Image (cartoon, rainbow, N blue to C red; front, side, top):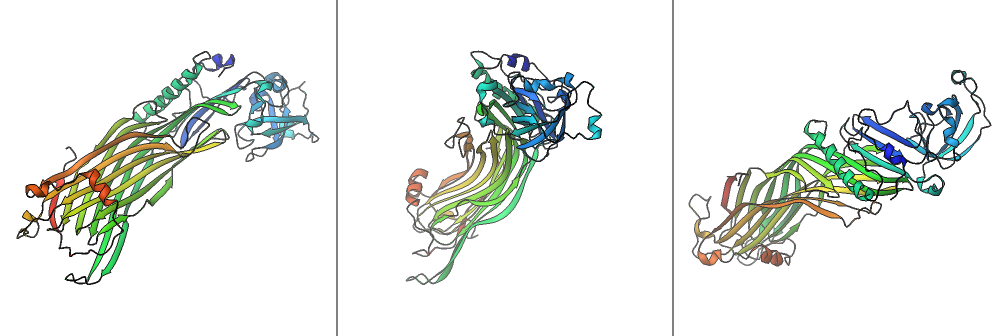
Length: 531
């Protein structure tokens, strides 16, 4: 990419002033900023002297008629002070020139002039006629504005380069604290570095600013529930069987984000793009399983909650619309009477995640204390597997230069049970009914896990596509693992992969072929997260 020589001057540090200075005209370069209670940001456009101009009071123009809510439209303007630079618009003809607009005109900050003429309506309100400087040609002009930047021929006035940064935190993204790269052979590499350095600069504000968007969800939801009237089967009397999986989930925390982009608006092309997400949150839940039938259970992904998060909008250039949602999912394959309650508890603190990734994520991802209660039928040979997922998701809908994609960040908190039991001859339960005693042999493995992954659902101007998926953090924690009973029974433990293949062949839940005795406890304990 070749940068205009004017870029060198345009890229001087501007931290000492507001990005968008309404007192100075945009001749060849222009800044525009947003700063509201829901975010802040700056976009800088740089082109040739004939490629970028101004239709605001700073350049001597007074707009007489313009709809503030419309994009493409015809407006009436008059030059009230030629000495301020009205003629700048016509250096190479007005057509094809990108212009800055005042906030009272149009729903976007910039538009392209597609036509200019002497308007048939030459009326000027008295309040505005008094502003016209003596000696200034007060001919009222008509100007057609359009926002189809792809329709502009860059051969007429050259490319118009853009640099953009934004943050969900007010007051953070309003100035370029990291200077964009200068022209040269390494300009492309410099853009990549600028994106990374800008996102890092935006992320560092999280240390002192707490205006992040809240994440708050709590719900007790049944993931799967099915009951059967099981008929008598030989010596097994008729009974009512059921399978129920529920999850009491809670997500509470704060999220902030930042964005940086570089490319050209004329023609529309993105050279580099990056998204930063800052996350502090606690994900907790209790998985409950109660089953007296055999077979496989799959709830599918169940949406539990969705809400919008304040977005960023640089009209017709880039907008980001984030949402926070929570999904849950459970699977199980069973052949014993099982009752289980297990907590999944994670704390994510100071997490800094980048997409596309340009550095390793930072922050701490730690499990919390958990309670485990597990009861199963004694005197059975059983191979069982249970998994449940609580998945908070941050989805960022990105619309940049008319190209759209959604970047998603999934925080998948899970709990799982792997059970391999062998019937033990002459087994008997303890007299208190709470301990299995010698009636069990085999192994129990209860795990929890956290998988943080980012991906996109569509291509974004060739920078990444829907196949882009990166793992930002993944770890499985052994919550409880115990083998018990005599040696032959312990050796019956087949391992996770072997059992997963076996369980995949199971049919959906149904009445058991043999009697399942009442479940008795094999684990009931609190487990420290500092394991």
